[in-house]
Image (tube, rainbow, N blue to C red):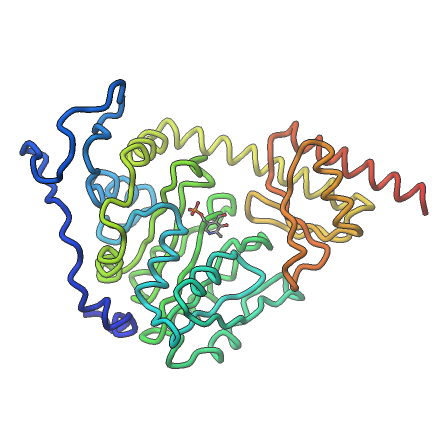
Length: 361
Ligand SMILES: Cc1ncc(COP(=O)(O)O)c(C=O)c1O
């Protein structure tokens, strides 16, 4: 057993997992209490009357190829959200263990930890250095009960990629001590390589990838957790037995084939062009105090009057993300890059309030 697995919950390590109905496609199924007929007009390939294959072999192979790893490194789940939840449940004892997060960051790390009854230690990113990772403080925050460190790169909501050497230092220093989870939900927009090949060096590294963003499949709910095969095996004991619906499996297989990958690449290119336009036009607006550089498909802005910008967006029929409840992000909003028409509509609405503010001044 790899040493980092000593850090998992002992009761999960010894758990006898649920024995799901055996997957034997060559035999006719009279072992899972399913209906032998499809529902009328069920047009799926596999048939919705049948439970799906748990961790479908073809899908796992496909995701492994998509992300450049081996199939045994991949656990497929319902989005990265499920990967986050599985890690917290498998590693953190309620009331005893904790996770480290680096705010401002994606909210689900904290929520999943709290649901599990795990403590959350916050080591803020360094704002003055463009929201860089504070390696020294992350390492100093470690104690015997810290099981997971969540790093998000590109980070949501600040948009920046974390320094690769900094992430690797954390993996190295915490080898055998904590799992380092690198959430790469937005990496396709960043023009940098995934850290996944570093699995060869770091047994404590877990990478999260999602089909929700670059592949336009948020509604399908599918993500890949990429890790050492023994971590994948452990988490496969915890995941619900038939996690991925038939439609999800079929949608991912179809919409990430070579034709759709080429389409995704074109869409990403368009988003990057629009991101540049949004960033430069927002930077010129008198209603905006600061625009952070983004490596993702969203832009973080600090407003002179965030409420006015929110209202202007709503008035233009658009909703943007209000981040003001985060203490680290006063007056901040996050804008997902939309179509050219949507971005133009938003920019005009913001221009209009800037003009009004200018008149008032
Ligand atoms: C950083 C980050 N990780 C994970 C997720 C969840 O993604 P999924 O749709 O794969 O559950 C999001 C969603 O916005 C995100 O921003």
